[in-house]
Amino acid sequence: MGNLLGGLGRRRSKPRQFNYQPRFHSPEKEAREERLRRRVKMESNVRRGQQPKFIAVAVLLLLALFIYMQLG
Image 1 (cartoon, one colour):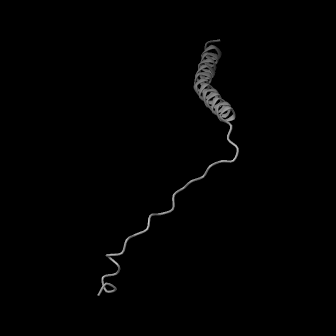
Image 2 (cartoon, rainbow, N blue to C red):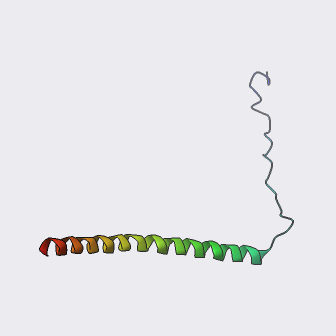
Image 3 (cartoon, rainbow, N blue to C red):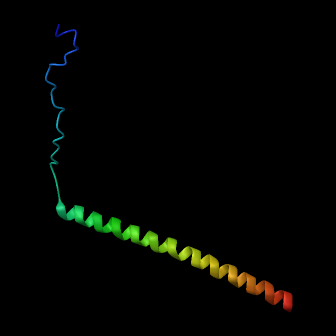
């Protein structure tokens, strides 16, 4: 009869635990890499922020040149 129930009374085993311990761990190197990642991310954000301003200035200069050529 127990076989007909599909093993409902059977205890289930727990899945294996992830227990990885690195052989070589350097907290200093990890901190250095994290600082580098933050700096690169910050620099990329600064570059992205300046590009639209540059384009706007270029468009305004071209518009001023166009108006100057039309008046002159």
